[in-house]
Amino acid sequence: MKLKRTLLWTALTLAVLGGLAYANRMTILQYSLGWYTDIVNPRGPYQPTSWQAGPAEPGQPVGKRPPNIIVILADDLGINDLSMNGGHDGITTPNIDALAKAGASFDNGYAGSAVCTVSRAALITGRYPWRFGVEFTPTPGAMARVAVKLYDSDPPPLIDQRLASQAKPLNELGMPGSEVTLAERLKPQGYHNVHIGKWHLGSTPEMRPNAQGFDETIFMESGLYLPKKHPDSVNAYLDFDPIDRFLWPNMRFGVSYNGGKWFEPNKYLTDYFTDEAVNAIRANRNRPFFMYLAHWGVHTPLQATKADYDAMAHIPDHRRRVYGAMVRSVDRSVGRVMQALREEGLDRDTLVIFSSDNGAPGYTGIPETNRPYRGWKLSFFEGGIRVPFIAHWPARIAAGTRHQAPAHHTDIVPTAMAAAGLTPPSAPAVDGVDLLAQLKNPKPPGRPLFWRDGDYRAMQEDGWKLISASRPRKDFLFHLTQDPTERRNLAQEQPQRLADLKAKLAQHHQGMPTPLWPSFIEVPIFIDKTLEQPRTRDDEHVFWIN
Image (tube, rainbow, N blue to C red):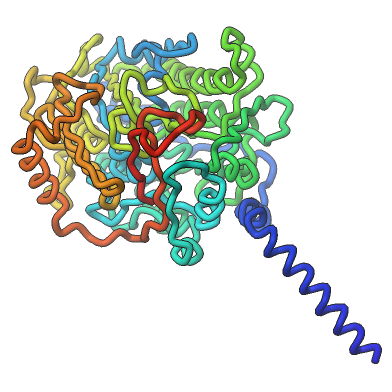
């Protein structure tokens, strides 16, 4: 009898717990990634990094050996976040502006995609990523299932719940190890290759930087700039953004070195990455090195240091002030990297390229970040793919150079290889061009540029741009030479031009492989509204497929 009562109470207890779990399943999903991270990857205390030191004396003097190459990539930085492009909220970027004035500014710089992973794959390989199946950004199934419930829009987002529930672990989604990175291309020339910061191209051993040509990596393992309750952290919460509501409970403050255990940095993440970049420059001053400094700033969650926040006191709005403080920290990073190069006598013979992985998102609720261009991250309008693009190399690039021909993230690999004295291989062929050669030609030959996200695709050629959306099914045709801010859709007025570009778009994508992982969510992106602004079905929108 006692055993029966015990079994009955156990069954009742499990039923109640199961009912509570079912009733709160979205909350459990919303916190699941963070809980899993705490169990599987507990973070240890700060560990100083001992960078592998190069020769005590240079084997060849600076100027006789291959140049150093540094790529600094900001995350979600809008083109109008820079004061050199007009700026907003009184935010200034003196160090990035100075880099452009002392080198070349590519006024028509384009990202490889309008989203993180795809753009980064293009940058590091020089190839359109859909050539090797990287078409969608890795998304946790739990995040998609939570976000779709929290996302308030008309039309609503669409989700394939079956595929979302079957999604592979996030760390298994990334660029195949068979792809050849810029680090691997430079290795035969004696380069020591260093990665610092965000990777977002997979976290399995064969996908991480150490397996992709990098000798050393400080790897951003999660996404907080500081612990949420750190006394030096000033946070801004975006209650209107379902992604933000997922990030805060699930992101952690942690990095690793060369695949080791996670540990917490000793300061605000952008400043920590910058400290380590400076240390790595000093350790490698006597040999050629390639550094890929991939910042998390200014991606959400919005966190700033108290010092940077206080420096933005002229901005009354709290969220905008935190954002401005984050831009300030990225700009300071550029200044500190350049100062370290000068102190080591390396600045003249170092090629430094600065860009952003895509345009700023609308989900920060700050309308001015991409102005004067329309659209946001996750759209192929200019606001989603137009990015800052600067190259600095005093030995080869004249100060104050302005270049009008389009520059694309795939161009970074052939440009860096040319600087190192290498010829891009024919197989696998890169899609980019050598920008150093283009700078010598006032009118370089035209070329088409392509973007792809499932059936949502775009191309640009000879000043014309086509965006072909699948939901809603619509073509946008813009003459960028006359209409750079994409205000007038000429699809009805120019049927022959539209047909020609659609044929070229179809030809480019013919025979591309199946994506390495499927999409399971489609989200409406409103071209002229931020996520905070009221939106209706009549507002211009396209669905981003992921």
